[in-house]
Length: 110
Image 1 (cartoon, rainbow, N blue to C red):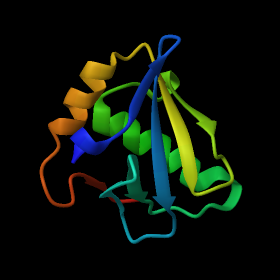
Image 2 (image 1 turned 180 degrees about the horizontal axis):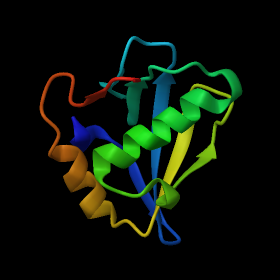
Image 3 (image 1 turned 60 degrees about the vertical axis):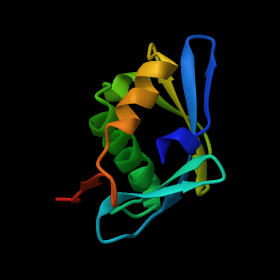
């Protein structure tokens, strides 16, 4: 699954396209579609709640502090560009490949 992800390394950052589906029952990776990670989010898109949930979820998922993850594009849309600062593209890919098969990872919105 993670082998199909398009990760772009540029200027000390690694870019990852993410397609989000807000208002889900739980936050979970659904899969990869056209090179983008597809994530269902247990948060409303209202006032950036889904964006914050996405960044927290990715931080937990790849073991990178939220302070080193930036929503570079797509703040008001479903397709987003997330940039990881100071993260090696090989390490990021490795972290994503270590995910279990199936639902891959999930987080309840408690």
